[in-house]
Length: 628
Ligand SMILES: C[S@@+](CC[C@H](N)C(=O)[O-])C[C@H]1O[C@@H](n2cnc3c(N)ncnc32)[C@H](O)[C@@H]1O
Image 1 (cartoon, protein in one colour):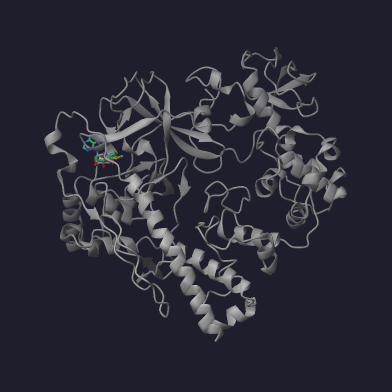
Image 2 (tube, rainbow, N blue to C red):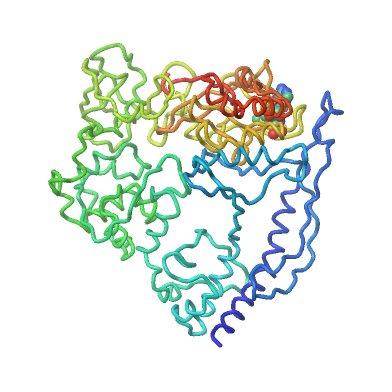
C-alpha cells in the first residue's frame, strides 16, 4: 500500500512537472533561435552555411522510469537549430577540465558524428580511450542523470512528508532515492532547483522535519560537490583545487593576528583586513544568528573572507562573530603550540596593504632610494600599523602617518617576496601585486607601458562588446563600437587542461575544422570548444588587428586580447594564430599519417607529438608582466 501511494505521488509530481516544464523549455529554446544578422561578404558563395542545417524537433518523452506510466506531453513546435556547432557554454572565466582518470573504465554518452563515415569512429574511440591514463582502459556507455529528476523526486518527497510518511517509511519502499548521505536530499546535484506553479515549496517547517537539512549537513554536502573554497560557486574550480575535510567539534587554532597573517588578498572593501579588534564590539548583534554560530563552530579556522561567502555576511562581520564565538582568538600568539599558523614563510604582515599602496604611489621612481612620496589614494581607514611594511618596486618602504595622505619612504633593503608567487608555469617576471578591488583609481593607470597594473582590465572585466556574425571563415567577431589601438578587448576563456590530456579533442577539431585550442605554455592549454565567450570567434589573419597577451591575475594565468591598431565599428577582428596552429594540416592528412604509422608499426600521431618538443597546437601569445 505504501509503495502504491509513493508511486502515485511520484507519478503525479512527474506529470505536474512536465505539464509545466516542456512549455517552459520550449519558450526558452525558441527565444534563443534567432537568425544571425546578414552581412555583405566578399566571398558569400563559399559561405560556411551553404551546408545542410539540422532541424531540431521535440518528440514526446518515452517512459523515463519503469513502473511510472506517463501521460504524453502535448506536441511542441519545431525549432531551427543554429548551424553545426558543438555547444558553447557562455563563460566569463576559465574552468578546469575534467582530469584524466586512472581508471580502467572510460565512460561515454555518445560518439559524436558517429553516423558520418568520414569521421572514422574507430580512430576517435582509440583517441578517446587514451584520455584515460590507465594502461588498458575499457569503454563503457554511461547512463545520463537527468537533473529534472531531482526536482520531481524532491517534490514527491515533500508531498509524502505532508501525507505523514516518515523518512524511513519512504526509504523502505525504495521507490525514491534514499535520504541518506548519498541519497536524494544530500546527494542533490543542483543548488538551485526549478520552481513551477503548484509545486510544494519548502517552508521553514519542512526544512526542519528533514532530519539532515541543517547547516552542518549542507556545508558537508557542498564541500563534497563543489569547490572546497566555501565562497566559490564553481564546481571543480581551478584556483582553489585542494582537498578539504569537514572538521567537526574542533576548536580554533588561529588567533586573530594569525588570521591576519594568512590573508593574501582582501575580498572587498568590507574585508576584515581593514578592521582592528575594535570592530568586534561594533558589529551589529542582530546578524549573529544560530546558523552563523553553527557555521563558525564548524569551520573555526576558516578565513573570514570565506565564511562571508557562505554566511552572506560581510567579511568584517564574519570576523567579529568568530571573535565573539571564540573569545580566545583575541589572544596574541598561536593558541596551540602546534598551530598551523606557524608558517615558516609567512606573507609580509601587511600583504594586502602593500598592494593597495603600490598602486597609489605611482609618482615615485622605483629606482630612487629613500624617496618620500605621498600616498594620495590610500583608503581612508588604513591604519599606520597595517602600513608598516609596504613595498614599492621591490624596495621596502617606511610609512609615517595614516589615512589618505599617508607618507611612505623607500628604503634600500628588499622586502621578502611571496614564496608561492612563481609556483607553476608562470610567465616571465609576472608578479601578483595588482589586485583590483583595492585600487579604486586603478583604471586610470592601467596603461600598456609605464606605471600601473596592466592586468586591471582583466580583473575588472571591462570588455568590448563584440558581435558574432557570419564571416568568411565560419563565424567571426565584429566590433560594435570603434576600438582604439592598445585598448583591451576581452579575455579568451575556456577549459583549462594539460596539453597531453584529452587526446580525443584534437581529433574532433581536425574533423570539424574548428579548433579553439590555445596553448598557454608547454604544459597547459585552454580549449573554448564547449566553454567560451565571443573571443573564441576571432578568425586568423597575418594582418591581424588584435594580439593575445598572457597575464597573471590572482595566481591564474589568463589570456587577454588587445587591439594592435584602431578598429572601426563593424570591422572584423583578427588574430594571428601563429604557424603551429596550422601545422597538422587537414583531417585527411592526419588520417593518412596515422595509417602510415600504423602500417610501419610506429604508433599514433599522438605518440609522435609527445616525442616532439616543438609540438604545440594552439595560438601563440605574447607574455607580459602584469606590472609594466
Ligand atoms: C577560433 S575559431 C574562429 C571562429 C570560427 N570561424 C567559428 O566559426 O567558430 C578557429 C577556426 O576558424 C576557422 N578559421 C579562422 N581563421 C581562418 C582562416 N584565415 N582561414 C581558414 N579558416 C579559418 C578555422 O576553421 C579554425 O579552426
